[in-house]
Length: 391
Ligand SMILES: Cc1cc2nc3c(=O)[nH]c(=O)nc-3n(C[C@H](O)[C@H](O)[C@H](O)COP(=O)(O)OP(=O)(O)OC[C@H]3O[C@@H](n4cnc5c(N)ncnc54)[C@H](O)[C@@H]3O)c2cc1C
Image 1 (cartoon, helix red, strand yellow):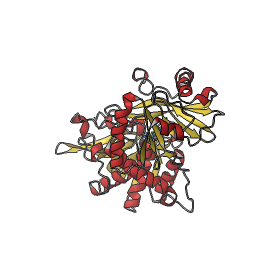
Image 2 (cartoon, rainbow, N blue to C red):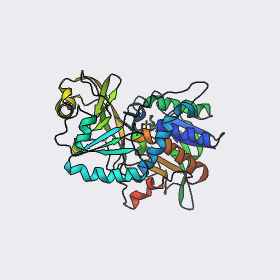
Image 3 (cartoon, helix red, strand yellow):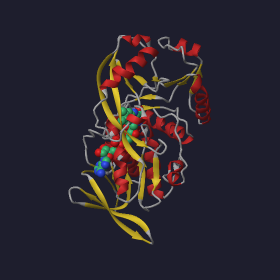
Image 4 (cartoon, rainbow, N blue to C red):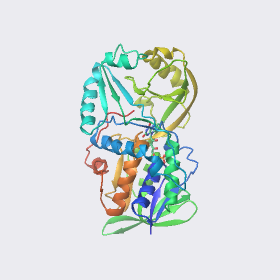
């Protein structure tokens, strides 16, 4: 009987790739309802990786992730095709005002303990390195010197998928609609996954990799998973301003910006009271003129001349409990595994999560990095694993 993975985005595909890498011949079926990935987060993201998180587990996950991304060409080479995801280690730069300085220092200590190559910079050091920044309110910056940057996320998705298929994984273009549940000794068990086509897939184990739509899948087993889709808009910008060595900038306002081709991309988080679940994926064009541009021009005076060339929107698969991934076996269903709720950082987490979930499925436990801090059991214990650096 197969391991069935529902959802073939980066998370489902990374798990499928790892399962068949760790155990060649392992029977794996990925059910993906939209092979064009038109609304999948994996195809709509800003495709960046950072070491600058505020929890141990996220920094450890990123340390593994960057090594994987650096070696994608050899790891995911397939039938003579060597994928090049164009990883550019341009760094993240977090800026802080006096109010945010202590948090930046705390996070820096935690990141250094895990070996992250990050540096705290004074305003004078920032001005010397990035003379195009206006720093009047800034008291400290934190810069990733290596191990952080951006890449082609869609290419990573297709490379993982192709490699998984070359290792024998079967992708089924269909929609999973429900579970056939069985129970023994009072414990629930997924016997099969029902598909829209009318087919059923008997399964030994099943993985929920449904991205923003993971909550609906968990509900088939009567489980309340606090994951919803929250729209995030990315603006594509052009400007004559030159910003030498521009990193991925996280402004004190929460707005982010990074180079993309000959221009830039930028985004923001809407205020909580305007952040509806599953808002239609229309870009919030009005927010650019009203909110994003004025703040960007304040921070980067050269951006007085800035043109929006286009925009797109995708869903963050937001874990509303604590903004961190929910990974591992369900306590309420003995063969259902979650890989959900990445809250805007799932692309960079797919290498470590793919490896860990495959270990769990094949051996019953984590063999390399222990992902148990991400277990869903923290919700019942009301013990949030709060990530402060949610962008
Ligand atoms: C604007 C934006 C910027 C982002 N920037 C970054 C970033 O810089 N760095 C980073 O690491 N992350 C970033 N992310 C987050 C990242 O894109 C996601 O965390 C990651 O792609 C999640 O992958 P996934 O496979 O879980 O979800 P998805 O890519 O959404 O895949 C889930 C798949 O499941 C399928 N599916 C769902 N339900 C069913 C069903 N019932 N039957 C069959 N198929 C089903 C869907 O069709 C979909 O293809 C960003 C996201 C957005 C929206």
